[in-house]
Image 1 (cartoon, one colour):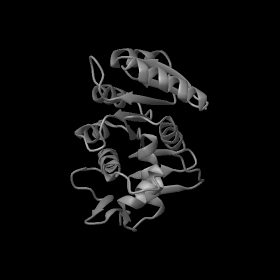
Image 2 (cartoon, helix red, strand yellow):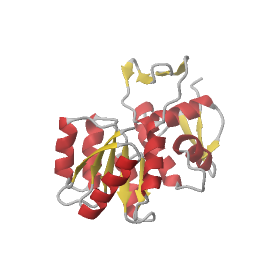
Image 3 (cartoon, rainbow, N blue to C red):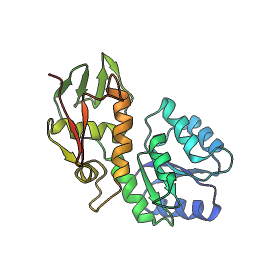
Image 4 (tube, one colour):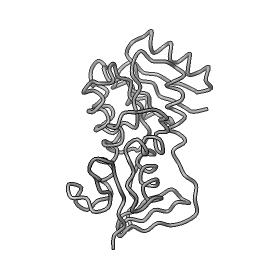
Length: 224
């Protein structure tokens, strides 16, 4: 069971999702606006935020950005169209995944459980130049300072580090990190790589650790 914060302005959708997610075993608190959602977040910390894009007042993108300034809390966006610019902007704002409306509660529940499972227990240290992954503590440091990675960013870094020097396609990464067993949206991968590079690379625009393999996907190259 997870403790969820649902931010959705449509009364019918919000009530329906509260009921459906409650039946799946989750505890849900909800808010109808972005401002109210952020206030709820200050009062109590959920395990995950389910966030609608179209909200009155501050929209879902801005809510996502404000959460990401200080927190690595998992976020799943609710968006109206899979091919919309909403998806790209949402992922670049820091969301971990998205679900397209009309929402099927079982699909949303599966995405929630997948995001919350994104940890890989292990007992070794991985050193990548000035970046060190402590796999037992699930902590990543750069130059001795802990990086604030979201669960998805951490899982992506771990999967790439497990296969150092190996080119992984976007579809492989979707399966490994997001557990999508179908031809999923490669924008999930690209946006997460972009956010991860901003944290682990010295010059994100000229990455030396997480390389793009043209026409394939990405490869982690350990420093010489």
